[in-house]
Image (cartoon, rainbow, N blue to C red):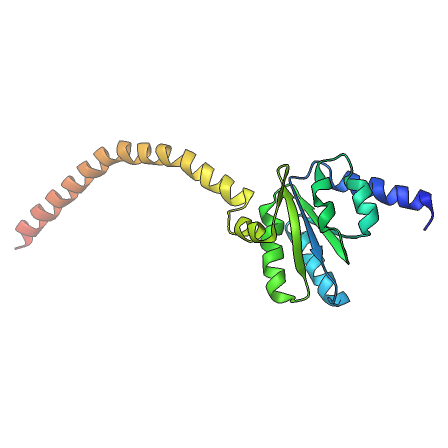
Length: 175
């Protein structure tokens, strides 16, 4: 690989990773091609990029970006997962580590700070962005729903009283 190709790969990797709030470094040595392909498909499902990287090129791509705190994790056979929602790839990684014993989590980058593998496990237990949005919208919708129920309670109560009176009157006439 000549210098031009290396420079192109570094620029491409930098463009993919810069601006992502979650970046995770894994070691994939010992995984089969089929397992790696299946892992990539899992990352694709949650909108996460996953790329096998040469350590020296990744170090160059990380320089001056804040992601250089991950340089000590770049050793052996490395791959990088990156996403805007850091919870989604963390969930995939924790599940994948159970499914593929050769996959190892080295460390990650979350909102400007380096996190250890154990912290990524804790991160995977948090709700994702979509789930948080759904909960937030539910909270916004609850007062309106309760207000409508309060407004409907008066007419509903009146209808129940009238229905009970009708039942009482028709029950007395028939009896």
